[in-house]
Image 1 (cartoon, rainbow, N blue to C red):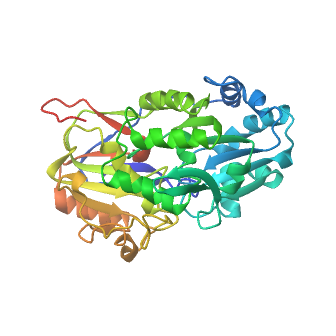
Image 2 (image 1 turned 180 degrees about the vertical axis):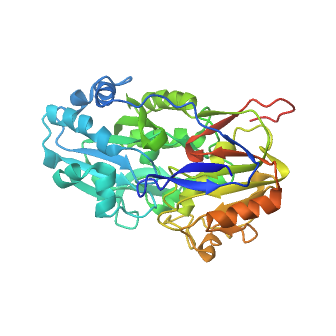
Image 3 (image 1 turned 45 degrees about the vertical axis):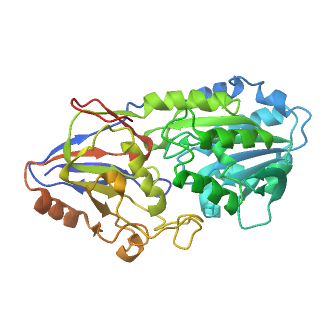
Length: 415
């Protein structure tokens, strides 16, 4: 029987998880183009030679304090490998360790615990520098900037720092085009009301989109981040095993765009066939079930449905933290909606293989008509019964960071 090995448990397990598919099935693994992992010297060189920006050590001269914003475990960024050359530049400019703060841009996510901080930043950095997780429920700094009809409030440590830097991954995003860059500030460091407002416009179809050109959500975040003083970004392009495949540092917009251009190549995954079954694996955003929904971003560029009308899409996820925390989309959150069928799937069946999440919890996020599986053998038997022998299946092993580029023949619809 065909066995498939899925990357599993970002930040927690970092292992391969085996799922067995029915006998006689033909199985394709749709892997991204990828690239060679960066060396320590590659990372340092990118930060020392920024894009459309003075060197970081020059920006840091005569500054009394600096704040480095990093993304949280919902992103695969190896901040422990990217922070040292950034810190070296700051110290070369005369900033002492006690003058540098590190803030984890959690947005409305849960704060990181001590073990999680060590994983993300490295235990040595956590022990030497003042580190905090943004908490949107705590008193925040009034910025004097109107966002809609109310004043935007952001993390106080960030707002009061002389030099502001953001460091994070660039991944395909459902409405910001790509993550990273200015998005670490809005919504990463904002209050819950501002985050809700930004997402509400997206839900109404008035902001964002699958690309960057004309993306109002992205441009709005960049304008606000500049007004708040963000002057330098480090954008990483991740790959398999969360390895860093590219680093682009410098101007808030220019460095981010260069990273996105690299991501277009690195994440490209050719789709040349139709399938009866499509397995979308949530790694490296499989820390919880809320983040696992990012698997569907991989389908945004497909011109027609990837799966036959009577086929099945399977979402697989370690969901190491269970349902997860998200002030907007968790049950009771500001933007939470009762689960319904996903229209974007065009009526295709969705099955969920989530060994770590009880069915009752899955139902908080996914429509009650979608089958839930906790056992790999049970999933295999159900697929065999549903699709029979000689079915054709495809596996997208890192769906949140892959982009299916449709090269199938036949009629197509606009992207």
